[in-house]
Figure 1 (cartoon, rainbow, N blue to C red):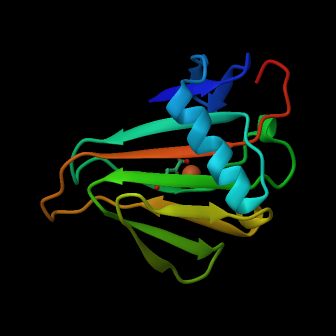
Figure 2: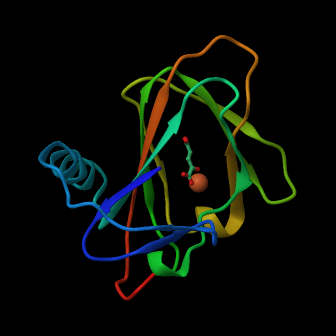
Length: 141
Ligand SMILES: O=C(O)CCC(=O)C(=O)O
Ligand SMILES: [Fe+2]
């Protein structure tokens, strides 16, 4: 897992303290393209690698207070397509198939009303990289 951004540490999932690397040109370009397409701005990006179908992320909402209230989060998927599930808290999941090059935007409010996950799969899948662009209100975390 890696973090790029501006001078701010980030406590991922209340457990992993990430120190930001400087924005690279390709990541900064991608960030600006997503901002142009969505109208939302982002100060950090977290990169997660899923090496195989055994790598996954369980049900959660991204609620780190460093993102401020009701953040918009933009997610770019690269490599093998994986299933992404979104469900209202206490409700039924909707499945999304996140293909190489896809952009998924979780709008403000989504982290309060919904949870999401990328489940394990027994299908043969190779590496997938997910980039989540997030706001950051500054301060230590
Ligand atoms: O890999 C994905 O599509 C989702 C990743 C995610 O939910 C997260 O990093 O918080
Ligand atoms: Fe998430």
